[in-house]
Amino acid sequence: VRDVAAAHLAAMDLPTPNERYICTSESMRLLEISNLLRRDFPSCKAPRHRMPNPLMYVAALFDKRLSFSFLRRNLGRARTIDNSLLKRDLVNEPRSGAESLHDTARSFLELGFV
Image 1 (cartoon, one colour):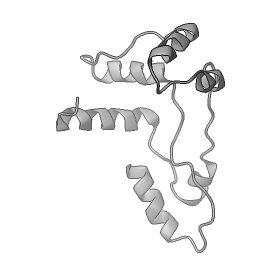
Image 2 (tube, helix red, strand yellow):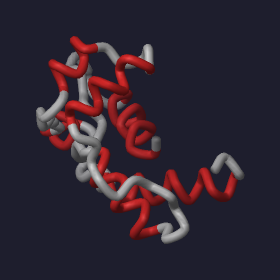
Image 3 (cartoon, rainbow, N blue to C red):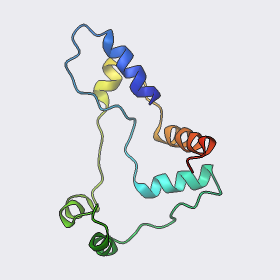
């Protein structure tokens, strides 16, 4: 949120902001997020292993938020994010995913959301 706010403020100073900006520093896999949470918050009960793809299809039978077409398009595919426009025009260096994740989790804990 801090980087998004800084990007919005910087965009107001551009003569003609006409680009769409990806306001993030990196993409992270769910297991990587889980590992970071467990590292920074040892009491966190985050998953330690990746769910096998066939089991994801079984889960989709019981969870209407998942669809087979979504799983076919996304399972096993790494996403890359290009934030070069953000760095060029608005935010010199966005916070790392690990820092953002840590600060968000700490905030959730302090506010009693978790």
